Image 1 (cartoon, rainbow, N blue to C red):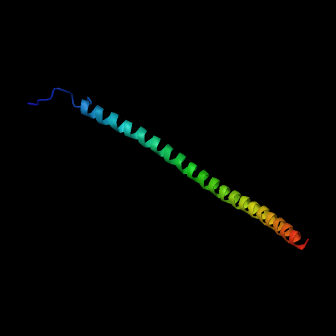
Image 2 (spheres, helix red, strand yellow):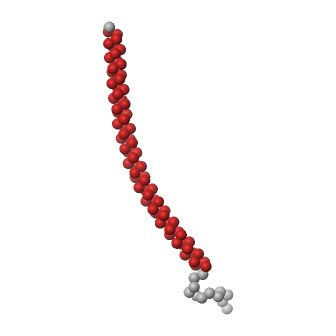
Length: 85
């Protein structure tokens, strides 16, 4: 005789648990996919921001060097002018 008393078509607790776990896994994988897409978007934005920062730093350094060169010329002119008097 059969020791199990359930009908052949009724889902068992193990089957229900397995289906529940697969459903949870499906939800987790969906969230993971969304998170990966968001991470990809953020990395692309970071790359653009870093490029913009690099360009800004280059322009800022060029301005600083221009001002420093101008100040050095002014100092040299004052020094040369003071020696000639």
